[in-house]
Length: 486
Image 1 (cartoon, rainbow, N blue to C red):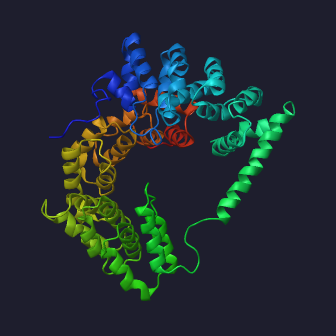
Image 2 (cartoon, rainbow, N blue to C red):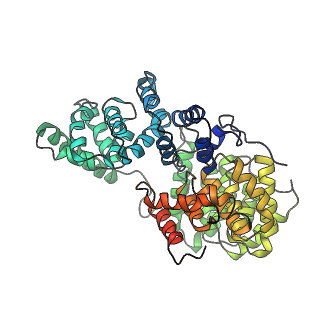
Image 3 (spheres, rainbow, N blue to C red):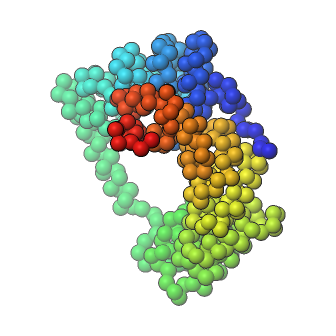
């Protein structure tokens, strides 16, 4: 019925490794029941080879750190991975992927009072390629006495040249947590270090002011034509500079009713970036011709134009847009560009009424069948069947829950199952108490049936865990209170 996951780096969902890679609660439960050597091998594979589709929005570090504690695993493998010669040869943009997860796991272990993990983070912060990540972990977990000695080694990374000072200023400015930099700037024991940090900070502020004073963007008094020309100029450059969104915002300030004819002509014209800017502006203003222009642009062979048309429609929320979405969603297959039918179903999922449930469910099934359980197009559709309470969507939601490699999408599927599947409370909700995503654990804390003896014990452990998120603990305490209804 459904296509298989296409990511060959993720093991099948029925294996221990596949469960741990996905961050599913059953992964922890199976690991604790499996032979210890097998569980340690799977955990090592996950920590050293980040399985996430998008490390910026998916969480695994606390999940793996907790299992690391449960299995009483050593840090030898993580240490070898961090200080392997490959670390020095890895490009800066790849080092976050190679070591970021391992460093985050060490950070959580440090919060569990693991002094060996804290020492590894300090050592890596002074010598590792991804030192900024390690420093951010230390900034929220180490004390002042542990952070101050790191200053000289970190600053020594930047030569005392104009280029080195510029890199130092950027590193200090972009730090997730400024606490270490503030400590080093105030460290009386190293006056040269303190003076250098103050100097590069002042220079950074001056350079930012200079850039603001000499900007080359639109200026007051520009006409619609000049804004459109500016957008197209960026498109024609090599490498291309994307100015369409900025140009659309500028049009909202300079365009008046008298400019409508020019904007309509641009939205049909051959200049790609100008067409995109005009189309987005007209859609945001709810122009009477915007929907027809979007339908026309969606079939354009230029991907910049067709994708911009779909994005412009997705942002619309008018009654006319919803009516058109129903027409597009109901159109026979192959009569419209595939993207247009998809974005129409997404709009109905977000804004439609009960009468749109069948169309949203059909789009969900079609997307899973054609693109598998990891398609980004599933996110709004999964939310939609949950919002509309489509009970017969439960089988496909269960499939997405089990198979997707995205822990964020799995959490959305769990939320939809909570309102469409009567068996959720006694089924998936129980394993969700061990899930890697805090929002999924919070959902489970609200729904999991306490008839399962594991549930109350897990709720108590989450309530006492210092690393658990506040939202989860709040939901947990609500379930554990004497007045709890379930």
